[in-house]
Length: 116
Image (cartoon, rainbow, N blue to C red; front, side, top):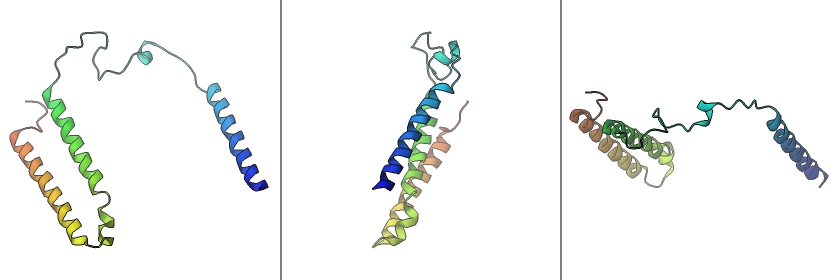
């Protein structure tokens, strides 16, 4: 029981020391740039009705789609431990094939061109 109390004591003292040091260390130099919200390069005090490029949103959606693909493929190396690993790899190949065809379609339609 003494070891547990020692660990809890050391952890709580360390937490309090870090909290106190975090109030002393930072140098507060607020200026206009630091206090203004980041609005993707647009002036936050101007009109909110500025036109946005549709291509920007298209590229952002494509990035999210292919980023999600990577997240779906992360558990694939452990697929061989399943009861039916061939069905796992078949579904993975189907998803990759579908995304590849979608990428080729977007490329041929010119959706990946940033500037005309």
